[in-house]
Structure formats: structure tokens, C-alpha cells
Image (cartoon, rainbow, N blue to C red; front, side, top):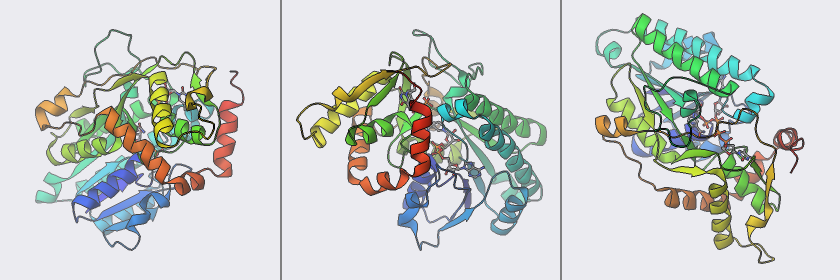
Length: 355
Ligand code: NAD
Ligand code: TYD
């Protein structure tokens, strides 16, 4: 079996669902269920014995030791993290705790577990750490995309905490020989994306008749990958990646934020038009920029393609259409994630931003 951490969040849940759609290998899913963790994401697995959900913290050494001894996973995939840049600006502490201290505790537990394995079980074991392109910092307009050799220059508390966790993973390989793999992926989008991030926030706000808040001039560039392509890349790296290596994952889809917002509006105009016949674009409002806002991310995923033969299956056009359709078809999921805590976050992040 495999152990997944953070498997009730956006990417983790997609990964678990895809894994069990393609294989019968059991997944133990350790997730503490922060605001971003949602059992409803995994509702289709209720009663499925191949999915064992455990509510617990990657920073809890006792829980980790017990899980590892009991289930003897052949691999661990570490998705668990605090993941939202704006939240890291308002309150970095949780990011230090989970992304750095939590990853450290997880590595310690895994080092102990792996050290006691023998033969093939020891040889074949893998620890796959899920990271982000944001550790590389921000690119100027004409600079080449990030390769795996790009210098680490994290600019937000989120990316700094992820960078720290990447360094710890690297050190556990070089110092203790732990068989690790690290992936650094670009911005994901798709089903089960929590509506604090750009794309789901725009869909949800548009349908609710609320403003679509674009930070600064809206010309910041992100490189977008459909979440299921990220999941297929992770499966491929787990299967065939070389121990100790880093693989960048991306979809060759650089887009300015304002173009993304226009695309979402155009799809909603087509699939769920406003009753007054006007375009959702009329709801766009430019608001105060994010402090320290990275201007551009771009991933060079050619190593993954060259060495492991991975390519994304979706283009941005096909992926964004599927995503908008998913949100239209899953309005009860959307309603259920908009708790009081969600509304408090929206108030905190947006009320101080002038239009
Ligand atoms: P998310 O915020 O949607 O989900 C994170 C999950 O981790 C939640 O289920 C949460 O409950 C769980 N979690 C948080 N702290 C935990 C802890 N201490 N112990 C156990 N579980 C804990 O995040 P996501 O977007 O699914 O991102 C998953 C991973 O992928 C993160 O490591 C993130 O840095 C990385 N990543 C995300 C993106 C993206 O675009 N979303 C891109 C590249 C990399
Ligand atoms: P986000 O989805 O938070 O991902 P990240 O900051 O990790 O790239 O934001 C994507 C881009 O969209 C980023 O440049 C910030 C911008 N953005 C807005 O313009 N308005 C918003 O309300 C949000 C949440 C993000």
C-alpha cells in the first residue's frame, strides 16, 4: 500500500481518486482536516476498503510511528501543507509549523521506519515530496522558464516554507540515504479546488453576482496545469523517477491573470449566462495588489518529458472548460465549503483592498 498525506485537499484528493480508479493498491490517507481538507472530496470512496482515512497531523510523531508500523507502506507521497500565499502573508506561523516542522517530523518518522526495512522493501521504498515552482522566485518577462537547476529564491512565507521543506528532503537523502523524489509543479486548477485561489474564486464569485477581484494590474503570469495531469506526472515519477532527483512539472501554459479571468467569464457567459444578458466581465474589479507579488512563474518540464516520457493530456482550453463545468454541476459542494470561516477569510483578505 501507499501512504498519502494531505489527501483530503485539492490535489491530494484528486490524486487518491485517480489512483484508486487505476489500481487496486490501498491508500492510507493521513490528513488533519484544516479548513482546506474536506472529506466530501472523497465521498465517492465511502465504504471502499482500498481507502483508509486517518485524521492526524504530519507533525505528530506518535501517529506517524503507529501508522508506518501498522501499514508498512511501500511509498509515501507528501501533499500535506498550508498552501495559500495570501494566508501566509496574513499569518505565516501555520506555514512554518506544517510545511517545515511537519515535514521534518515526517522525515524523522520515515527515516526510522525505512532504516528497519530489509532487502527489496528497503531498496524499493520511495518518499515523494510534492513541492511548487514558487520556490524558484519570480521571473522577468523574457527570462527562460525554471529548470530544476534554477536557484531557490522564495519570496513569500508560503514559498519560503516550501523551500525549507525541499531542503530538508534533500538533506535526508544526502545524509541518511533516504530514497526521496521531489516534484516542483506549477499552478494547478480543476475539480475540488478551494475557492480561495484565483480560478475557483472567480467562478464562485461570478455566479454569486459578487465582484471579481484582480490584484494590481492583472498582468502577473502563472503557468497553469490541469490537476489530473499533475496526478499523472506524480504517478510516473513514483514509478520511474531516479532517487534523489528533482522533476519540474508544468503544462507549458503561461497566462496573465486577467486573461484567465476573461476566459472564465466567457465560459460562464456561454454555459450559465447572467439573467440580465450582460457579461460576467462587468463584475471585474481591480483591487490593491498582494504585497511582494511574484510577477511571473514558468516551468520548463522538459526533463520529465525527456527522461520519463510524461506529457500533459489537457490543453488549457479543454481543462478550463472541464473545470467550469464541474463547478456548475457541483453547486452543493461549493455551498458546503463556504462556511463561516470561509466568509471570515474573504472579509479579512478583501475588505482592506481598495478598488
Ligand atoms: P490544499 O491546501 O488544498 O490541501 C492541503 C491538505 O493538507 C488539506 O487537506 C489539509 O487538511 C492537509 N493538511 C494541512 N496541514 C496538515 C498537517 N499538519 N497534517 C496533515 N494534513 C495537513 O493544498 P493543495 O493545493 O492540494 O496542495 C497540495 C500540495 O501541493 C502542497 O504541498 C502544495 O504546496 C503543493 N502544490 C500546490 C499547487 C497548487 O497549485 N495548488 C501547485 C504546486 C504544488
Ligand atoms: P493563487 O490562486 O492564490 O495562486 P498563487 O499565488 O500560488 O500563484 O493566485 C494566482 C494569481 O492570481 C496570483 O498572481 C494572484 C492572483 N489573484 C488575484 O488577482 N485575485 C485573487 O482574488 C486571488 C486569490 C489571486
